[in-house]
Image 1 (cartoon, rainbow, N blue to C red):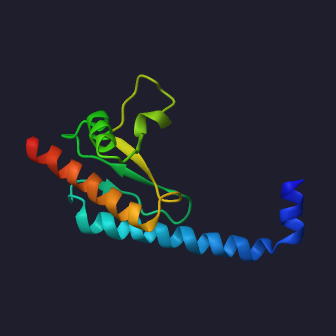
Image 2 (tube, rainbow, N blue to C red; image 1 turned 90 degrees about the vertical axis):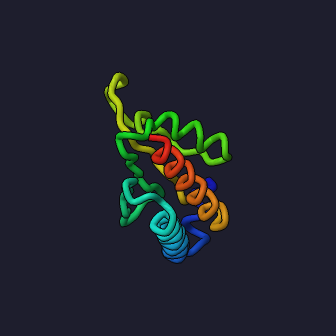
Length: 124
């Protein structure tokens, strides 16, 4: 009933246009912050839609250690192996979400992730 009321009483096209702008801006903010702070050996996707950025770590960084260190500093990322069909497989990547955090949290989170990556790269 809620969906029906929303779709019949609200301007769905305007809502979709608004959230497209919101998520495009959040994605651009995350990408520009990653560009400014992330070590160059860390790569990441440049999505044309959706709510996530896929970030690949250099082989010298252990993904699960990176995830733990980021979480210790208050930043949660989704380990890439969560998305594998082969539960025995491994991937050196994480998924970043830009839909939920505030702009300030996106900037601070990316700075923390970059700091963790740089620290782990220096330790190698």
